[in-house]
Image (cartoon, rainbow over all chains, first blue to last red):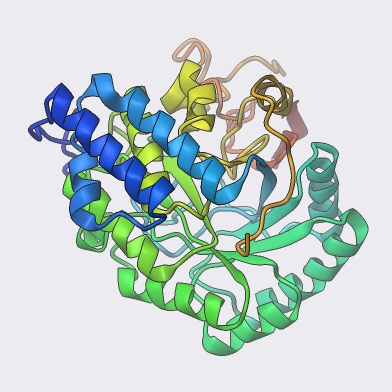
Length: 354
Length: 61
């Protein structure tokens, strides 16, 4: 096995000079006027300024993000279940991932689940009150056999459960994107993961531009684009702002926000978790940068946010993955559904075209 | 056969590891023989199968 090296930057992202309390208050007020009164998007400089509010101002930033979410998206929260239908053995070397064959991790490769197993997982998802089910495959991109399996599964799952079916199967060709769209795939997930300027430190087997190309194909053929981020991989504050602006360019309907949950055996296995208040800051900034997207709580939230998970729901999040993730477990669905009930947030399907 | 002989987080004998699996990680190694399990994680549960000992672990989120 080839040795992959990675030198993590430790601790907090880096020492940027925070705004003082008055500057922070003014910056948050200016963002409020832009997003709620003028209904215009913030520019890169405004986002970079908001990224520098001191810790004490993060709750105010989060409160604005919640107002923006309500004004631009409404009160509903979308619930989704995900399934790793083909696990491990992936030829890519994404340094955060326990499913890469480049790293010696505890995750054993398992073949594509059969139709009954996928359907049972979709039925579990429907029983949890979800409206979306995502079939995820650990592959570089689909070969013809995999395309056939996906195209066979999607209508069965839709018909038998009533769920919208999303797929995540890596890099697509133009023809594959067209066939998936025609085959009834509602959303296609393809994350940017991190800023273009940071990407080559995280993945060496494909480029950021290849990812952006697949994102463009997804939209071109009429699927909703689900394009997420993974924060906490040693990127700088500037690179996080860069990522937010790059997300805008690919124009996703949905952005899942993942926080690195360091996986044993991967090059990022010894990275520290993102601090909870930092996670809230960046959830809020995601919302302020992308006011109309479906912003979904995704992997790593339990270990990163701990008791602050409800706070994320009032910091710009309006969707969540319920139950387990791909190779790790989530907290119980009952806890999440109780949290939404306690917050009086109605559950329902969201769409890009609100 | 002792179904508690091995750590399900790393597969080592219990004498060497008293359990290193994290709270939100499913078992990854057979509790009897320490072989890596084929684990299927679904939204509401998980199950692990050992090549030698069959379906050995199940649970939910």
